[in-house]
Length: 327
Image (cartoon, rainbow, N blue to C red; front, top):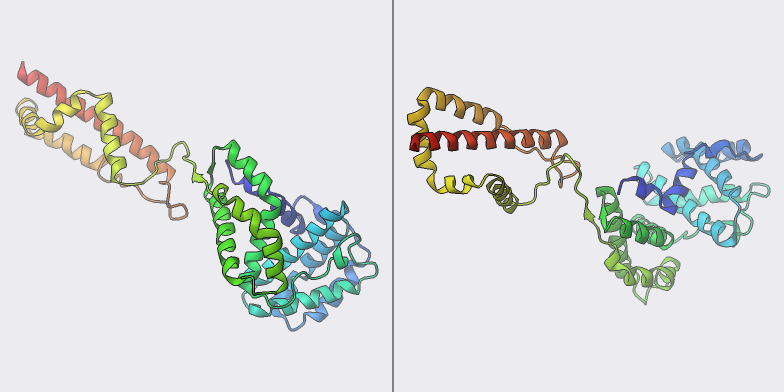
């Protein structure tokens, strides 16, 4: 699996279109310039939000030209709502909990567009939840809504990779489970807010049913060494013993062998060999990639592989020297 699997999800593809990826901004709307000017004026006191006006009106133009069935149009209306809210919450830190008020202003301007409503959608693609929802709840609803449309694709992808995934994909699944747990607490049966009612009616059941499928393990990549525990070190030693049977014998007789080698090779030569070993093997401490704690930097993986070969050559040298001395 690669990160491309994540971008292949329906929700991610739609967000990419709203962001203008793939030349989607080539569509045209006669009202675009006038609406851009009107929206900039309406958001005059909203600081950095004005910098996103062009992107927002173009995304609405894409949505208006998307066409399709009632279900697909309505789905895109929801995804636009979450795409817009995500910009206000995560990209504009000065917005705070006023993001809903800003969204209301934006949707009001869209309502004034001549024939600007989205044909075939519920309420002309109006704002979805405009009251009683904070930033955390908004983000949780966004995650469960995305899963509602992506779950079939997610299931197929995980089946193909035997539930192995990238760190980004694993994080995406964790976000869905976290949203599910959060909304279960915030939306008990006594909470009749619109978003809570919709969560319990539409989204809660399918996630609850498929919780066991929202798990994947990080895939191992060629050229990288994975750090897990001291047990891994033990297994590595066992591998050396299997490739060099005499190594296990040397474990228990190391003092005698070293003594023999000193006699055969002489102290200066042995000291030089030990110096080379410490210069190549000991400094090769595995450096963890802090962006992905489960893997060792690829360059370190190659160094470790090289040093293991040198270590084996050292074992062979000791063994041969010991054998000659015994003769």
